[in-house]
Amino acid sequence: MEKTGTLKRGFTSIIQSFGLRSWIAYAACSRSVALYRSRDRKRLFLALEQVGYRSIPLVLMIGFFAGSTIAWQAAYQFKGLVSLTLLGGQSARIIVMEMAPVMTGIVIAGRIASPFAAEWAALVSTGQRDALKLISIDPWRFLLMPRWFAICGMMPILMLFAVASGLIGSWVVSHYFLSLSAPVFWGSIQLFFQPADIGRGVLKAACFGLGMACIAGYHGFYSESGSNGIRNAGIRTFVETSIMILVLDYVLWFIMY
Image (cartoon, rainbow, N blue to C red; front, side):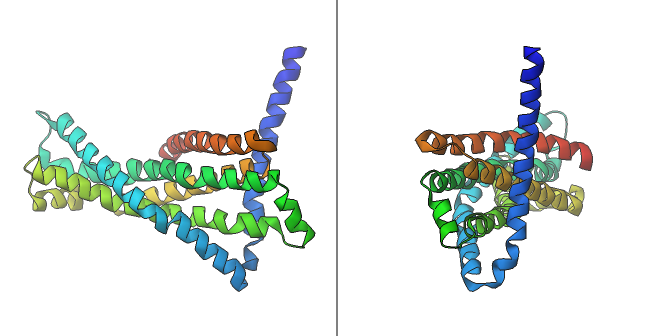
């Protein structure tokens, strides 16, 4: 009986947690009508700058070195089995379909989602969310909506930056270290790469962004009070987002391919 009760409470907690994450998405979208106000648009643009513009250098650097590593690994696996003339197309597909969405998601989870959750938790813990209600300001619209849309909207764009830098990194390794000419490398991409792969990669990044925004909002607004709650909000957001990205990546691979 005790084990049954524990399992029932655990299952109920999971359902409740999933419901609150879904509520975060609804709360953000339902407040989007307020974007006609200049103040709300200004907060949205500031969030877009923080999530997108300031993350571009980090995404470019990680994409470049990840693309370089993919080229080295592909060349090692092709050695004695497959011609290196296929290196460009193979590297491009791995970068677009797997590396760029997953790496970008994990980077943004650590740089953006986790600090956002900790900041929201601090506002809740110190009573500032309740103070906003007292002066007739909707905390969901003021705090959540701009950053929720910024994360969801900028993830696909940042993923495309990671694709571009990853292809450049792969080309640098292929050209300068593997003696593969540029026409052969880029010609292989044109021959084997499919435009639909870009769409699938963008869809992956958008799904990762949506899940990330919901997880950050949940841990930020429903965290425990005190310094431990603030710390745990950031840690749990990063951990759960990383797990979500890997699990959702597997599910999307199963559905799309």
